[in-house]
Length: 220
Image 1 (cartoon, rainbow, N blue to C red):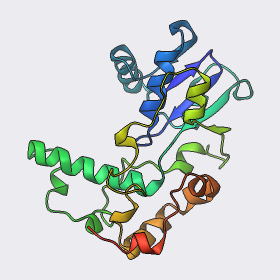
Image 2 (cartoon, rainbow, N blue to C red; image 1 turned 90 degrees about the vertical axis):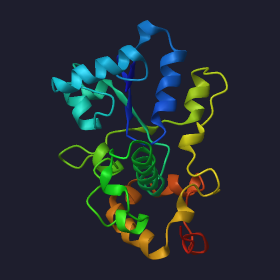
Image 3 (cartoon, helix red, strand yellow; image 1 turned 120 degrees about the horizontal axis):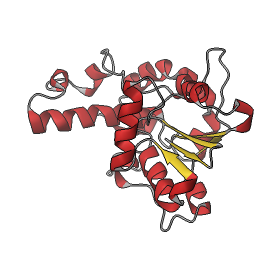
């Protein structure tokens, strides 16, 4: 999570493409103008130390971050680095766990013989953060004023800013990971993420991630 000029907070959800955005910001700006948790060797160490002591870290939720900063909330502008819809994030975590399990034989042992349909019905989704919960405070108020986009990176003069391949969803499919869902599986998970969909439905449609029956009927 970078903070620019002590007043612009870039909140960073897991598995949302935020690392690409935040690292670009950290690299592009003068070091004296941005404090960051993560994205460089020193930044990762800072994030780990701060998290252990109960402080701000790379993936701090918005309300937690604002509560721990010295400036008044009204003096801060909050952006959310969240470039991927929930269906991409859910799939990404599953295939990431599968990949590590195949490589090590021990890590993520629970996923070894588990199908995707079984996975989404089991309690292994703690790593998939809900955007609405990440953004809201205890009173249910959504704080981020903006979503981080690559247009913002261009405005910061990051050269050749583009979405990293691993943040674009499954490379074989134009709809990201959408084609890996059966219709029933998607509908089942959609209920879980209803709060997130309600938070930013227009954005999902605008960037071409709206699921449709012809795609969702496919399986893997």
